[in-house]
Image 1 (cartoon, rainbow, N blue to C red):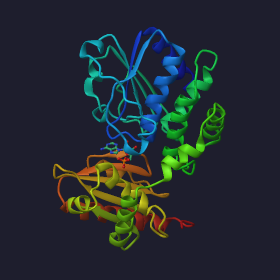
Image 2: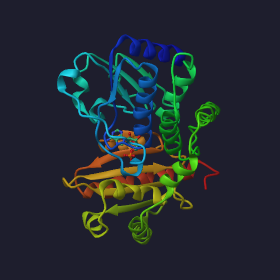
Image 3: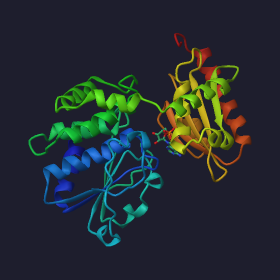
Image 4: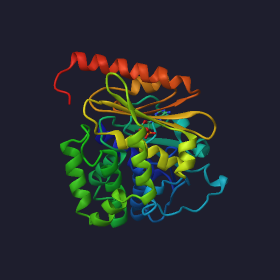
Length: 326
Ligand code: AMP
């Protein structure tokens, strides 16, 4: 099935002289890695084609990878193939001009909720979209080319979206594909330095999160990163959102949530869990995502308590009916 879909994607790419690559809002490692990595592979393999990532939203912690793309005239979209990576629903595509393209191909690893492409290659059990791109390259190695930059982009997405190869979505296939990509030649010292080193001020904010975080009766750890807090630590939205990952290893806490005030008065919710499925909770609050990593949006502060109560109840039920969690 996956081989057939990969072939269909490659054949579609061959049909077009212009390929525009799209991705989701607030790009993360997998999003940048898969869009730019695929772009690089296609540029190397089909130098006569016009291949570009047509999205300009930035991700600060990946600035070391993300080379600026030129702006694109609107008239160029009409005869382009849109390849949308790592984006479950069309409303989350950051550059909505994808609608101007002649045809759409979707490549994604989220739970499938919307088939917005004419080809939808979706593997919800893949650890990352970058893993899919790496397998795409490996499957058609005789026709596609790769270089160190493309390999680094793809490997970065595999590393970041799998929690450094820790999540349960990581399979033997993930590791075999990662191994093959690593062998292209990647400066892992530089990569990991870029991923792990934090600004001094960000560490101060981290300490503040540890001071202020709370835990519900059954073990949902949470923090509300208020506008005031964001001002005090001069946080960008991206830096504020990192707070969720600071709570990822608290004993007995199988769900952890960051509520982050947006400038428009809404509240961004980042939900994470170990063992427990939480995307159903996110879906009730205008969100979605993966079973153990989801996002949502709250319209008013009172919804925080409601969402926390639901998460707490869920965790209570999980603990009552499961053994062996830590
Ligand atoms: P985040 O906490 O924003 O990193 O999101 C975690 C996961 O949930 C990512 O895979 C997102 O694509 C997905 N996600 C976040 N927000 C939404 C949303 N509003 N609707 C659907 N999926 C979402």
